Image (cartoon, helix red, strand yellow):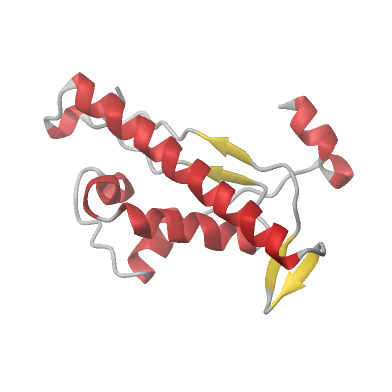
Length: 133
């Protein structure tokens, strides 16, 4: 983590926030014990869209959609681990898409209000205490 912060200008990083709120804004129904992690099953494309939106808004760190545990929902340990891995994969894919957009833009800066600057981006697994595996 310290190397990541050293690479950032000024030694600080901006983290995303409000994943569930943004998922609901994009039409996700999160009325479920899994909360935003429900979208890993029902609409993973929405998670990737929100991650990408946060990166284009300037976030340097994105949290996976895995805050709530899966076993408490009745999923097996194997299925729970697969969903956790999927949450990381989705975040990494959003990061890769962001980097592709930066490369297409060619110059570091903004375009249509979006920040398209190739920079280190950290994907962080979010694991909460409620029902965590």
